[in-house]
Image (cartoon, rainbow, N blue to C red; front, side, top):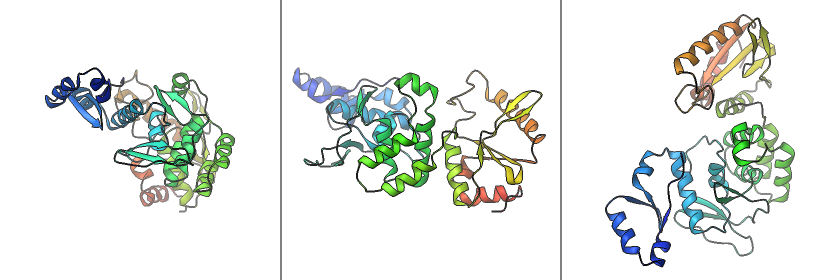
Length: 310
């Protein structure tokens, strides 16, 4: 979905049309989303929460085009997945010696500008590597790993759209070393745990939970073959000859990223056939979804039911 037109009060005022803007707002045609910025109300109503937050970031950037968007706001523009809803405020970088003030709707971080900042969707944002590192310094371990895994694997669609390849662990660690020591230990742990083999946020979060449960590291996307071809389960534990499949939030819905040419019913039939084939190749197969990936106790119970000592 394209971004809606951002209507700036300063631009209307500059041409003497501020009354026109006021009438559009009072009639309900335009909606004020931040100080001095408006969008078409119908377009806003049609957006999901992710698109609304990105539009808020676009609005802030339109008012402050020379400032670097950072942290969650940059992550949203980069299309990184988030385990939690995006914040209301837009995050910006400030020069460390001059600083800056946070205020309603804006959060300024006096951590120095990013020399590798890039324009994405017309917004000046911190580089992918800097964005991931900045977030990993301060958020939960699971949320950091989800974003790191995504940046390490960087889906092909993203590479075509943004014109950059995936980041590497070495790049992330190098960016980490050039910044403040604040949160560095936490970020380093998440970066070293990152794995491009995780294909979704649900898989990344599951890996975090499996680690917390004290289980050995599973093999990711291990190949199994039968007469029909290859099967790659999300995880495989050789100790129990157990294959694990993780169903992410968007696997079957209308907004799914893959197999969009197939109906949800056909996808379910194909998954059932795939599961039956996999059961003939391993001792056990266990499936779980995002709910279990988010609940360590529930995931542990699911694994114990399949003979895993946890």
